[in-house]
Image (tube, rainbow, N blue to C red; front, side, top):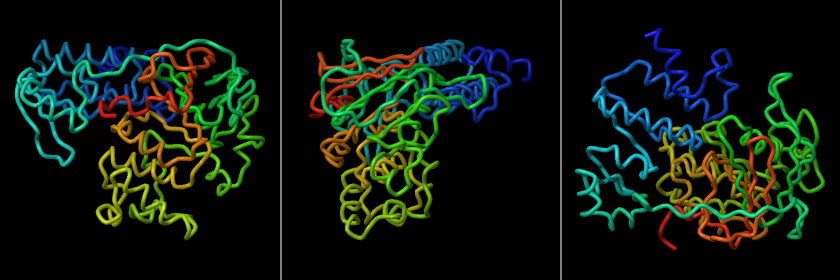
Amino acid sequence: MAARVPEAIAEAGLGGLERRRTNRLSGGQQQRLALAGVLAARPEVVVLDEPTANLDPAGTAAFFERIAALRAGREATIVLIEHRVDDAWPLADLVLALGRDGAPIDVGAPAEVLRRSGERMAEAGIWLPADRPMTAVVSKSGPDAPGPKPLATTMDLGFAYERGAPVLDGIDLVLRAGERVALTGPNGSGKSTLGRLLVGLLRPTRGQVRLGSADPARLAAKDLARQAGYVFQDPEAGFLTDTVADEIMLGLEETDRAAATEILARLRLPVGTFGARSPYRLSGGEARRLSLACTLVRQPGLLVLDEPTFGRIGWDMEACSRSSRSDSTMASVSSQPPMTNDLSPISRHASSNSLTARSWPMEAAGWHSHDRRP
């Protein structure tokens, strides 16, 4: 077993990071490490629950190559829970499609399931092969291009968790009111770190961040919650109470409680069904939606969503837009290239190293584009 560890680390794309503390790895790198730990043991049965959720395109491709090799060698029985069906579908011997109520829609050989039940699966919101929107065509322009007023800005921004090892360096970025922004890049490029700096969860080691005219890291918690919100990759990291109802009501004024109930209903977490449940007993997608609801109810001007398509939270972007302020700015932190239904969006492009920021005005944003329904 020990002899296979270096090989597994290399296959996961983590060569050179062997001595780095695991809590200093990015979310995507932690995902790669978890996969390496499972596959290094060469088990006879492997269950993988959305294993590519936080991986960048290169990591995703390497993962599916490894799965294809396991399948070809019949080395293990693989149960794969995955929404990236274009990559997963060709590898499957058997497909089980579940509806939103957890009941099976169909089970069988991939081609037969698609032929018999493709329409029902699409109606249930299940991604189907070749059912992805086109990648946005992005043009370049400077951060000072004409447009709505700036909401958040960074100037010569730098950050390091450890001295001498900067994660971000020299970031100049302007986010304007009403935009939908995609912060993209490979695992470890600093996307989540930048998102946390924008909302004041981290303080820069160089340069500055401004939310309006204020330093978000110096705002009182109550004031910051009204101006900026962050939805974590791991929603449990932000939960503080024992029930769903208590979680969303925490710290709210009496006048905001009705809005909280309405937002939970929009995100398919009605209080009558979920209110008494523990946040820690929800499914992955339900926990993500609760985290989103707890942020939306405070109506922040800036909302940062970390890996929003994980757990199919992308289903709820339309509800998210309806529940947020008309001038709110939403920033998506994602290892995957941004996608939109609009083929010629107005956009800006600012980059540092391998980190990219791309933006669209609200009316052009296709946040619900993974779902074929209008």
